Length: 334
Length: 213
Ligand SMILES: Nc1ncnc2c1ncn2[C@@H]1O[C@H](COP(=O)(O)OP(=O)(O)O)[C@@H](O)[C@H]1O
Ligand SMILES: [Mg+2]
Image (cartoon, rainbow over all chains, first blue to last red; front, side, top):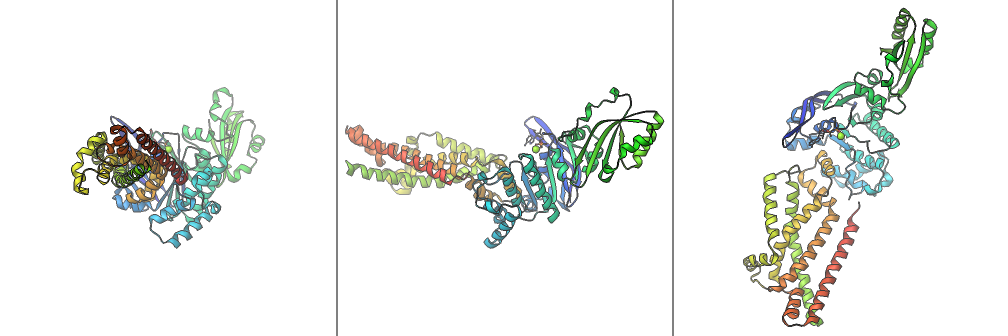
């Protein structure tokens, strides 16, 4: 479990002060994959770097399980960091060392025996599927392979937490998927808590359980990923969902341009399979005009969105809305 | 002619190699200190960093000939005399040490910040970062820096020859300038050029071989 309590971070550069993180409080559960999404400059990196104190919070407390990280002295912090793995956008591997030596690095810091190191590194190489690259140097690897090395290195000491600061942002979509799958496998097998910083909604959609949306140093929305897709509350959340490939810009639908009532339906899992729209048309004396629709596959379920124009008597429309609500469909009147 | 040039070559090689070793022993740790005590680095000591940087700059701005005379007493203390090949090693080492410190500082700083951060995130200590990250990661650049130092020292050693040091510089000045034997002077200069070129070539090769990036 990670607890962030009223954390702020102010950068002072001479006379200018910049509050990159503003009074954020947050709880992340054990074994959860927690996403933090936001546009560039929102303060995501600053926040995640506060979690292992690569950045010192100006105010507030950080708890890892029951240990208050923010109260530790330098030496205790150094030891505590061994329980917190981290991966980065640009991998940060040792360029002059082989894949094997890169993965062995955190083990050598522990001064483990040669045999013990060798066994663990080989196990990790197998785990991240890089056995044949053992003696290669980072410059000879693809981006995805480099991130696999970085992941193996980050989990070598069996940390309880893994932090990823834009860990897939330098990768193409296909490689991103494979890295996300690896991270999910790590969470499932070792019950590691993973915090994912990203500016890509694809990442959130693919593996996150919950997500926080950051804007201007603050968390403006925090939700399960399912609920976020079903019913995004903020404008930023809307635009992140719309940023997904194939999702129609919903903002272009202006109710003033339609004479009927505009509603937005969100349904997930099984309700997506029911013929709801045709039932509405059959049971109520209204006309239905489909304006836009999409389905998002999340890691645990699917969320469908449908924007409709309902034309008819007010009574009929209200009855139809009541019917929809009973069908466990989320209805929002725009 | 060969019987005059060969001993001089050996003297130059002796002076340059020994003073290279001493200047690195002195300058390299200073270069490391300059890097790690800088503001925002892994062993932040801003005041110490400023003072050390200042001292190094002062030493670097003293012309070599003058420095050599200033350190005569130290030479006398260490090797018992102020002229001759061995005595010249003292000022050569002292003159090159601040240069080495700055060159090594530049090399070590080439390690990307992110790599140091990831080591910190893994719980590495300051000495572990210095010896397992900074130095190995900048090794190719360190080799280039050492090459540059040796070439500089060849130049300095020739200058030292003018005021009582041995070696090729002394030979060139003694015969070329004072006795007007231009053939020996030209031969000495050619040997110096060959030495410099050879070391540059070798340095580049080694730097390339150790670089895995
Ligand atoms: N070391 C720093 N010094 C000064 N300002 C910084 C520093 N790091 C980040 N910032 C500023 O803090 C804000 C948030 O940055 P960051 O956390 O990197 O955002 P994100 O990761 O969401 O793109 C930005 O305005 C950035 O310029
Ligand atoms: Mg960032």
